[in-house]
Length: 137
Image: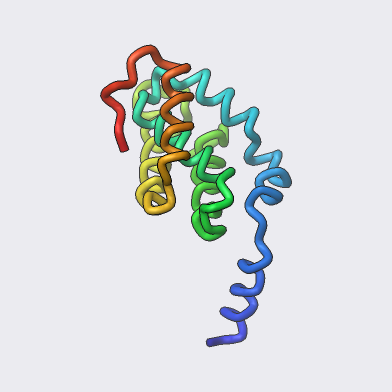
């Protein structure tokens, strides 16, 4: 193992995603996440909102490994970042890149999404949309 890889592994061992999320206020915050979901939830679609909620609750779960939380933080930060590849205000395609990033992150961490995380996400989705019976992971 190279010295560079050892140093990286040490940094990863000490990484605390919850603290990191709190320290990333310029890029990510729970408030910004909820503002985005409320503002664009209907446009982005129930499935993407559900996937975003899965990531949101997974980021807060102590059972999800740090490496997966880093993926989640990156995806949620991209979701709420106002300047991304395709600006959100452009109809239809403006939110497509956000949806793609969220779906990819869910695919990467799906093995860590337990029933508790899925239940919280589904309950919140039900409070945001009337009919969510067609949404599954």
